[in-house]
Length: 584
Image (tube, rainbow, N blue to C red; front, side):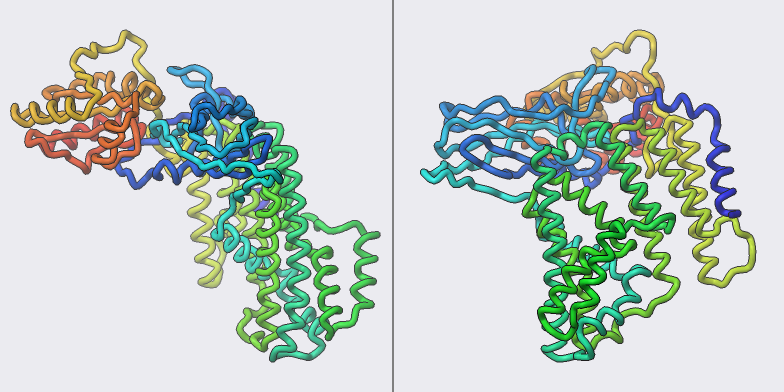
């Protein structure tokens, strides 16, 4: 009760100015970045795959990594040879994004499905052009990929490629293994092994009996996964996940599942169904392969409360993938992971398993916290960044309080270590709340400098900047600066780069920055065309795209430690210029 009162006090003690948070748009400025390693290569940030090619249509899937997004208006689809006719691409509505320089645009986070109507059955090469950016303020040049589309034979057999990886299957196996170590499942292993094995532990007989139990159980999970994947594919649910009308209910589902993990209530089948399944299980004799298989099927339907909440969350995730085969395989691996400890028990390795104890409750609570984190992650796509930061702080503060952050009584050393972690989480929660009310949006840097607003007066004279667009012109400018002993600042710019506009108007026009850049030769490389020459230049300097700001000393050598990649505010950039001046 004391922990709950402390949590309620922290919630209601939030300043009344929270009402103004909903009126602010999330800031794209997350501070300075000076290392290309902070960003993924374009084809890792945005993964394109061919899902299906039928006589009627071609289905593509884009997967934008967390923290990256794609522009709706930058997609282009062409065929080679050009006489192969493609219909207009069917793109779902994207997430609305307003920018003060570019106006209203639509972007896609996460998974995006695209359908291209097809009338020509010949084989051809599909040329796909797309462009995206990172939330941290880096815009990638337009990227083009070529996909081979096979011809359709007389039988109309489609060519299908499924968008799942062995890494995902391994993660689902590990998740199933982790679900075994919950207070509702692990203590049942000795009882379950006694029912299934009937004392036949060890050797091939025990292994075969346990396998006969585990495989049907995993097969039932696989059937659920395939149905949910098919359900999601038919409704194109992953495209609808860009809408708040879908994201908010999904987040609420995850929150409800988290409450189930915390023991507020139990998720289970209706009593009429569960009682009949109990009777079937009671009449089934163990010790035979057929009996073990029946028990495996029944147990998958009588899933325990500790497993049902994460399982329901996994089903929601699979329904968003739209992949029936992938969904079935993923939940099959989940079932195998849950059955792996039973196989260990059957072969005589029960001594290797950890014993039951209070630590199982911590595992269950940890799963609940992860589900709440997923709910906040979904809501972050539709809520302003400041509100998301408040929710993250609320979650961290709640965890910190339940770890005993404010319980100042004597505790054993292990509990004191948990209390120390709880105090850290509580401090982090306060930092998130302070940052939210200060206009911050980055959970990794909740107490950062607020973004500097552009000067309301007329823009500074830009005649000092020399714009070049070819590698030869840039090399000439660098050589001239080196010959005259003049330091040089190189600004990578493109018309399609929103963050470049922010830096141009709000950073490079700042009076303090202008003052500290006196004596520099100012060169702006315009990479708007994004041709092969310009892309080769990006590779030469190990850049993914604009914006980037590079300092060159009087000797013509770049000062790499003060390089800026991505968006930065005026105050931090002025400090970066001062550091560069100390080295020149």
